[in-house]
Image 1 (cartoon, rainbow, N blue to C red):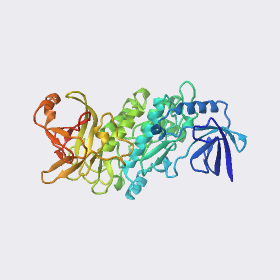
Image 2: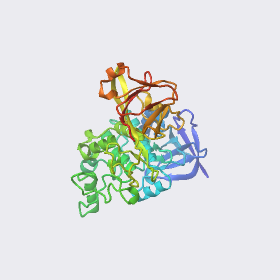
Image 3: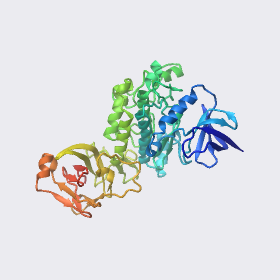
Image 4: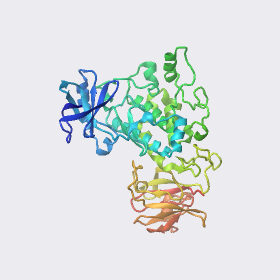
Length: 478
C-alpha cells in the first residue's frame, strides 16, 4: 500500500505529486513518510493550524537562497503539502537523508558506551567533525536572522563514520518579529532563563544550547547535569538544577555537579574533562558555562565562534601510539606525564610532534595570526587550506592533494617539511627573534623547490609562496 501527496509551490526539480511508502516515522507534531524513489521525505502534521502554512511558506522562501554547501547542513522545505490521500492536510516535502545517518542521540553515548565504540574502531575525530557540522548549520540559520529554538541531540542526523551532520526540524525555526517558537526546547539543553524566567527561545538561547550540545558530543556527557537534589519534588529539583541553580560540572570552586573519575582515562572508567580540548574550545566553554555566559545571554559565544574553534581543532589532533585513538595534542602543557592520551592514559611518545602557527601578511613584513597551533607529526600532510589565505579546514580533504608533508629526520634529530607543491618555499631561520620586516630583508634564508625540504627549527619563518600564508615554528617537537 502506498500514499499520494499533492504539493503546491514545489522547488524546481520536484514533482507536484509524490508517491509515498506506507512505512512512516511518527513524532509528536507529525508523521514523516518517504517517497518510493527514496529521494524525498514528507512531514504531515497531526493538526491543522491557521498560521502554520504562512510560517512554512516564509521559511521556504527565505531558505531558497541557500548555497549547495549551506544546504548540506539543513533540510529546508522544498514544497508545501496540499492534499494527502485526497484529504486537505498541512505539511512539507524535503530531501531524504541516506539511511546511514542516525539521530545524534543514538551516537552520543555515555562514557562507557563511547569507550566500547572506540575500541571497535570509531575515532573521537569523527565526533569532532560532527560537532563542527552541527555548529555550521546553526551558523547558517543565525546569519539569516533565524533562531533554531530547539537545539538538542534529537534534532540532528549524523553519519558518524564520516563526521557529517544535518539539521532536522527546519519547520520549527523562529523568525524574530514574525513567528514564535512552538516549543521551549528539551530539558538539559534549554537556556536557564527559559526555566527561570519563562524567556522566549531566541538566538541567545540557541548559543547556550549549542554550547551544551557541542560539549555533550565531545565529552559524552551533559556538562550541566545536576548531581544533587535541589528540592524534595523531583520536577521542581529538575527545574532548579537546570535553571537558577545551573552549574558547570567542572566549576573550580563548586564540586556539586562534578562526576566521579573526572579527568581519568576514559578506557579506565574515567570521564573526559573539557581540559582535554584545545585552548580555544576551553576558552569558549569558560565564557559559555563558567563565567558570565551561563546566566548572561549576551556574553555567550556566538555559533560562528564554536564553528571556527571546532574547525581549527581538527589540525591539533594526535594519534595515540598505544591505543590508536585521535585526541587533541596537549601542546599547552609542559612536556611531562601531563601530555598524555585522555583515552588510555599513555604518555605522548618521542618524537613529540612539531607545532606551527599560520600567519597572513597584511603589509610587507607585517603578519597577523591566521590559525594557531597546527600539530605536525611524522607523516603529517600540509593541505592547500593551510597555506592559502582566509581558509578554514574543509568538511573533507579526502580528494585533496597535499602541498607538503612532514618527516622525522632521525639522523639530524628533527623534523623536516617537504615541499610537494609547484611553488618554491623560503625559510628565514630564527625570524621571530627579530622584527619580521628586517627578517624578510636579511640575506640568511633557505629555499625549497618541489621535492626539497626545510628543517622545522624553533622560531623559523616559512613562506609558502607569493600571496600565500606563512608559518612560524612554535615548537620543533622531538
